[in-house]
Length: 119
Image (cartoon, rainbow, N blue to C red; front, side, top):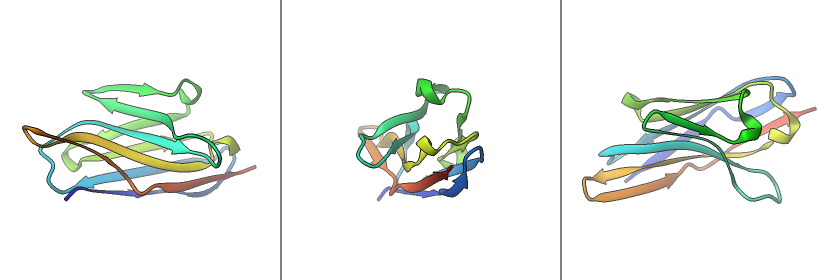
């Protein structure tokens, strides 16, 4: 049974910072990619950042403000968000892809954590 537990969301003023965490636990054989997505009210879920095999990919509009990192020993992914803007308000979801065995892949979503940026 795989479980992703997110933490770190909350309310912050514009210009502030937050750090999100997502810890994966359970029957994990290997992890191939860990990432963050967000969904604002009335909008589709969009990519924030993903890290895979040491390479990172960010949404163009977020480069320079957001930083993704991982602790592979803990199967944990972080998202450091700086210079937050009201338009960053959304529910942030982590996504982890990997294998539970050499022959079985998995892809799981976290429960989501609310980030609200006030102006």
